[in-house]
Image (cartoon, rainbow, N blue to C red):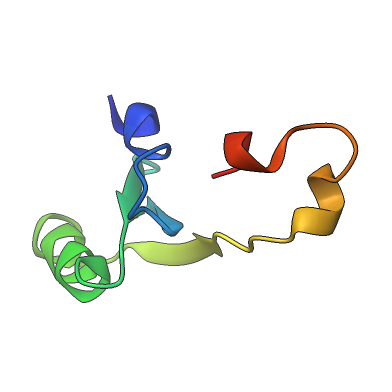
Length: 72
């Protein structure tokens, strides 16, 4: 499933697309796959709208709660 890819070390963002018919598409991406993923979605859903949720690594959010080596 797509959500398992979120924990890969090279994944830094999640593209969420919504097609005109309401179909929701979720794709984890890295810096090399972002553009190709958007093009792939547009081939199947040319009317899709997109949102990008990027991985913003901020250690201060987790400091004191989770050991640094457990933060992706």
